[in-house]
Image (cartoon, rainbow, N blue to C red; front, side, top):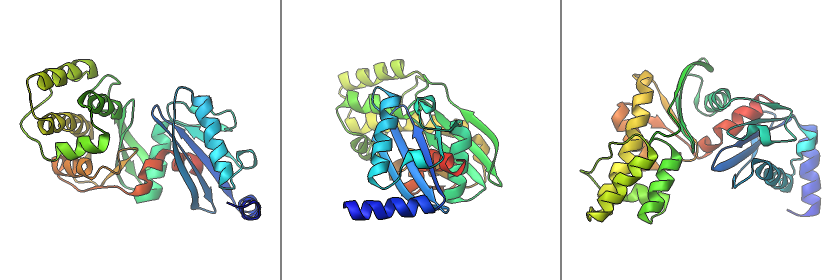
Length: 263
């Protein structure tokens, strides 16, 4: 962006109703800016070792898009929400993901968010949280579990889902990531095809999510968070739940959008 264009963008953002949301997750940090009810900027960066550092890097990148966090109300959410020094307020992930999902998909349905540290299932009615459920942090039903297993198998996350779509047969019984990893190591040692191991890994996560989402019977479902781009995951959730699971490219920013809407 040139200096002239940047100045023009900053002037437009100053005169409009600009609001900023920061969602600092254990794996990724998302930041969005809303102006007059429209999404004008959305970005994602690795959280890294420090939430404070991630918050500053997010602010720097927002500034490159003409969004000055010192000139707009900022709300922080997520695992590291207390690490955002320029936020005027912090809110829970449940309330922000619910509000963001309602803005993206509509006020009624069930939100499924598979995060790095936990998985959340939130029932919405009229845009309000009616009930929610979360898994245990050790449970084999989180994004971190998938990352650990993909690393153990020597594949990327995209490759993991691609392999899983061609596999069958194998299962993982443990609900703890450590013990589940031992099962994967054992399968690798026995020469089980990677496709079957990947299938077992993904089905383990899908099974945990489905058990949390029993409240979703007959309702619309929305997949948010960092795995929203994985078509095979949405497909398997749809098949196991018996209802279509909707998602979109901006669904990964649901928490940050909800924070901005609350700013």
